[in-house]
Amino acid sequence: MEKRKEEIITFKVDPALAEQLRAVPNRSEFIRQAVLQYLGHECPICHGTGTLTAHQMLHLRTFLEHHQLQQCSECGETHLVCEFDS
Image (cartoon, rainbow, N blue to C red):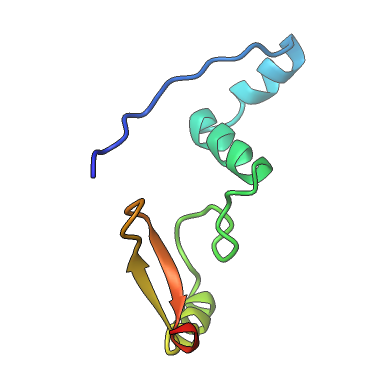
C-alpha cells in the first residue's frame, strides 16, 4: 500500500479572521481538525484529539471484547468487525 503525501492547501480570509487565527497556537492543526469535524470525519470517541481518556479506554476495551480491528483487503484501511456478524 503506497503512503499518501501531504498536500498544502491555502485559502483567503478576511482581515478579522486572519487576526483571530494568528492567535491560535497551532493554526495548521486547528484548521485541519475544524475541516475534519465539518466533513464528519472526526473520531466519535476522541473527538479528534488522537488520545482517549482512561474512562474512554475502559469503554473501548469492553466494546472490543466482541469486536475486532481488521485491515480491509480492498482499501487497506483498518475498520471494526463485530463477532456476531460473522
